[in-house]
Length: 255
Image (cartoon, rainbow, N blue to C red; front, side, top):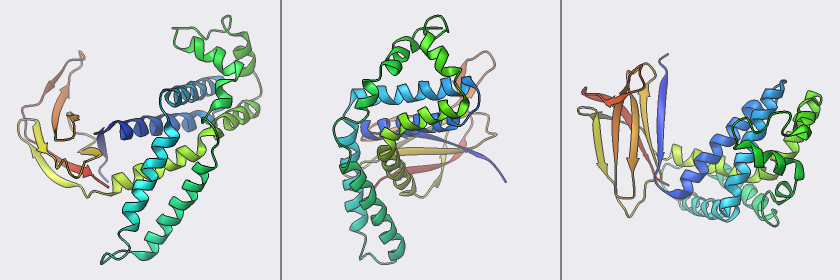
């Protein structure tokens, strides 16, 4: 079975933030159960990056707005011909559950973690090359030497503050990605451009290539148009647009 790589480009700031958080949550959980101190280090760095994003914007409000917007769009399909009503009811129940969990979040999400002296000490040093060495942060060194189940339990406790938002973002992005059926396109000379309908904003552009293709996709765009360039990557680190005509699958995701 042939393997594929999909390159995604968000076309608005809200979805851009959601994709970054999705990436960080995946990174965190990929390391969470690891037995070594290096797994715990990497998981904690991902957690601190998540917390930094929450410091920069009101994610609770942004997620609630998107949940309610999508919920309205899904509910409007109730009487549309050919709709799987059982699946529709299941989705609306999932939305209701997540909206209730979001409403149950009081205050600023992650506020307890912001007041955690241990996490703050690590956060202040983590951006410095080698800044979290044992001699810099003896408390961190001590924590990393604790039994693996203890470290994992602490990480579970810390990440739990974000669980309703993590689940909400997962649903939102799943529905956005599923909103479009991939179509075959050709980038002549490695270049492709498409105009967009500004009255029906595209949220994510997805470009899919075979994993063994000798080039990768670089997508850029905004509300009115987007472009895709296919670049060949050379051993010296140099990249250049291919001169070949490239067949690929394109999804313009709108919901």
